[in-house]
Length: 489
Image (cartoon, rainbow, N blue to C red):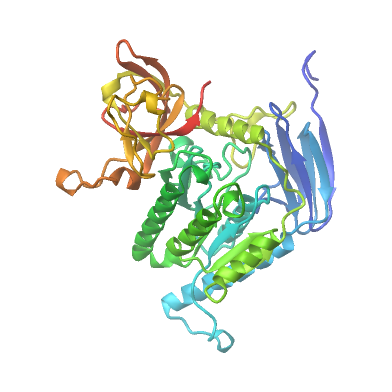
């Protein structure tokens, strides 16, 4: 019996018919536990184990789908919940089958296996898929579904998932572009970790701890802030993928899937910038399939631009996609950054014990961040590009404003208007070549991220600052880059 004043457990069983889904939305501060009682079900392509509660929180919005019918038990108080029989899952499954056939043909060609007569004229390239669509169209959901179906196929595939949406952040922090090979289904529990949890911030007990992303720092949520930098980072990721495939020929056959920002489809930025960035993705990742999610005009635009070069397919948008406002997205960024520094803990609803949770158990995701006082000169701090620079009044007398979008500008923390307080800074990996003679002016742009810190206090009088880092490692002597994201507890 619940103690006085504590909410009682609220459990309800839902019987889902074949090819239907249970959709739910959560309010801030609430959580939900879902347990599969009978049948088979999945969440965004990741299969649920029977009789184990799966926990969702942090304003998660998701759906439990079943192909053959099932019974689920839902514990908690979602703000919205209903069952829908109108889903695009059949179309998404057909896509998976087509991509699976492409992978099989690519692997057969690599190994020199016999080719059936009916497939002799078919191409042998693995699927390299670019997913485009407007805001709130469900692009990331489509990417997760296709990735999860691929790794569930039982063929040992480890496709690459590429996140080029800096407002989402992927496995790191908002403002980053990243790529990772995926070996096991990506879990869904919180928008704070939309693609699972990276090895740097998760206990080894988690299956998604196998994710080892390569990330680059863009630093802003919108591509219009610095499209030239965005294009360069996309090409950097493409070069790294090509280098990987040179030594991993079988890994290449699994293909890749690219998630994109909504501004690639439409937005306030320049149409030329959009087209240039889409082309940068097509070239850098050697795209052979473009999926357009629920946008007729964009589909026609892509057909016109790429007809004859690659396949353009328009796919339906799910009716379960929720329109997300700006304030919600800001809260999600806060969830992501808090999870990065402190780990992610979702308290289970009343009546559910943490020990009974299945899937990605989030009760142990507690980290111990380090707050350290260092000197101003212990870090080399930069901004990239003129648009993100401090105002002219904050520049030293006689200094000229940088005009290049890709120029690295050194920042003095003592300078008025530096913007460092509460700013998220990306720690760059050390240069590959330590020889000064081999260095080049824009080298900072080509260095991946090794972590993030936040400046929580500036003591200008003593030229000292307080740095919050997710672990005890020293950041002295490192190079960091500031963007436009801020975070405070």
